[in-house]
Amino acid sequence: MALREVLLGPIYIARALLTTFKHNTRPIVTIEYPERQKAVPPRERGKHILHRYADGLEKCVGCELCAIACPVGCIVVEAAENPGERYAKRYEINLLRCIYCGMCEEACPYDAITMGPRYDLADDHPDKFIAVKEDMLEPLSASVGDTAVPSGAPSAQPVPRKW
Picture 1: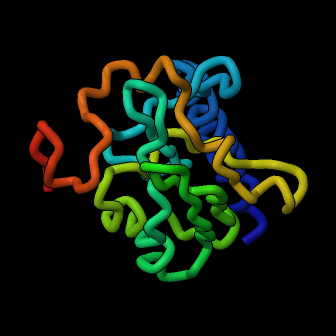
Picture 2 (picture 1 turned 30 degrees about the vertical axis):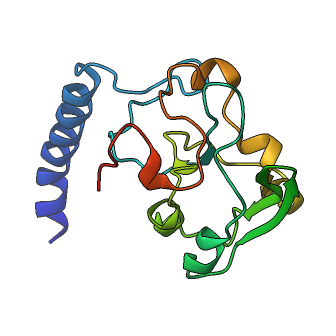
């Protein structure tokens, strides 16, 4: 047994070195993460986005259908009213409890919430995983191309909904 190990040992070492050199000649596939991010699939469900109309008004009217549809109950919505309009005074999502199932965006009749392509959700403290309305609102420049107008019912939108 010892003689066999002595004779086959160098062959095993040569095969291992050959495998190592073969992998060293291949191109590097490492992505330098903070500078370059990996492309995400078009149906990726990442961090939530609250949308606005082109005039800057929030699409969310505080109807709480997303909170009702959420299977883990991680969404908190408090509605408030101004004369002639209703809006969400408080909108929070606990990202640690969220299972990113997409039920909230399916339940929203105004398409106010969607799940965007951002997947970098790491942080150092659990309190930072409570996403508030100000963190989730899309910037005004992103909502300029929206053609929908604020109205009382989603059926009154000029663009038909894509179910």
